[in-house]
Image: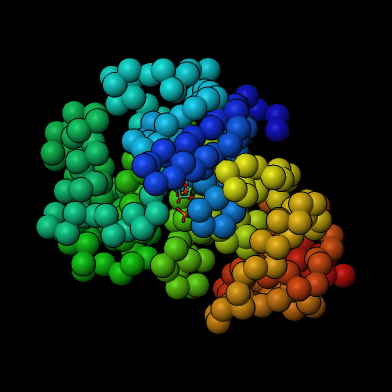
Length: 309
Ligand SMILES: Nc1ncnc2c1ncn2[C@@H]1O[C@H](COP(=O)(O)OP(=O)(O)OP(=O)(O)O)[C@@H](O)[C@H]1O
């Protein structure tokens, strides 16, 4: 990683203490993300990924307690920020798309009013100006600005998720945290959303902390990956290396865990139409039995053809 880090997490530990049990959900986790870098945090449900994300955003509430470590954003100690500093930090500098975010849109407000709210609240824009900018945001994620007047239930799940992603990008943050951004969407829509995220990242240049348990999506988007298991990072490597040669037995198990669901997903044993590994230019071999997400619209890329040779 050549650029200066946008985010440094050092030795972060978080414990949930309830009367019934004590869970060390995050155990001495270190993560560094460079400006404009896409870092993936992988691991099965319950391994502590969301807790890390919530700690970065300072959104943890009791019974969660941060027992140690540091979260540093562009040199500033996030864990020491005042309420006023946090207000400026969230959304403007780091924005998060939460799990199931598309269902968190307000059902009785139009999409336009909800998007415009970000500008009126954070930038004191006039309503008229905020709505104009909201229209621009919608278009940025491929939705006609006429949809400003729609209510969430009038949009498909994929469109709602695009709205939520647009909202997170509204104030051009330097870091976007995406916590399972495509869960509950079908495979084709999932691929559209992933392409959208890639396009926005190229256009706006923000860094991404991408959280998912789905290793195929993880490898498709991320440049580097940290694999979490039981609150710890057990492996950390460039995406291509994890794909080619997972070192930790848990990573290997995770790589082989994706189910053969229907749709454009096939085992990579000689068949690879449209597989995209644009960010893994050195990929030369593909281990049999691995599963990857396919982009059904495009033909095999140069890299894929080489990868299969
Ligand atoms: N409010 C809470 N009270 C007690 N334990 C909690 C609480 N929230 C999370 N935990 C525990 O902390 C651990 C990590 O949870 P976390 O949600 O961070 O995992 P995750 O990897 O993001 O999984 P998922 O994708 O299912 O959310 C789990 O064992 C979970 O049961």
